[in-house]
Image (cartoon, rainbow, N blue to C red; front, top):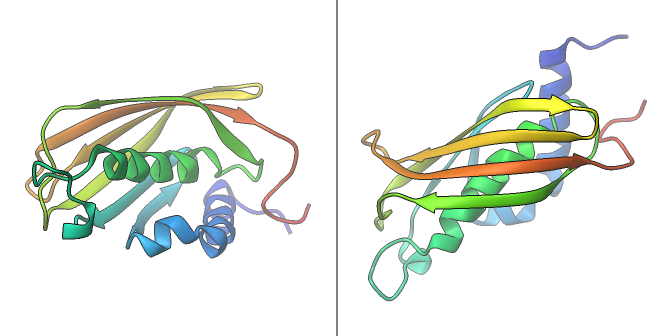
Amino acid sequence: MTMTPQEMADACAKAMWANDHASQKLGMKLEHIAPGEATMSMTITEAMSNGQGNCHGGYIFTLCDSAFAFACNTYNQLTVAQHCSVTFLAPGRIGDRLTAAAREVSRKKRTGLYDITITNQNGEMIARFTGHSATVKGTHLPE
């Protein structure tokens, strides 16, 4: 049976989520998945705060990276991060619900480019993340 692109994205996300212990343990939730897209959210806890009482940038990066991973792995090809960069625009605060929305900008041959925007529960932009992906050997689902 042939899957639609959405069915493929759903199945790949389900397979990835089963083994993504980092995202699960940080309380992330996969809110949306579609071919080349993913939205994930996470509530900032006190354990995620830095010495200034704001969300440590590493947790913001991790949320972006997880959304990026789910977005670029929606085609049943194992895909990894090749290069990532983040720009912090405003602090995340303890108790904030941050949402990372990832979308594919370009996907050609073995590489992809993804934009990820992080906002808080008030819709304020917290960070922008750019991810470059590389497809490697293997699939998430049996062929």
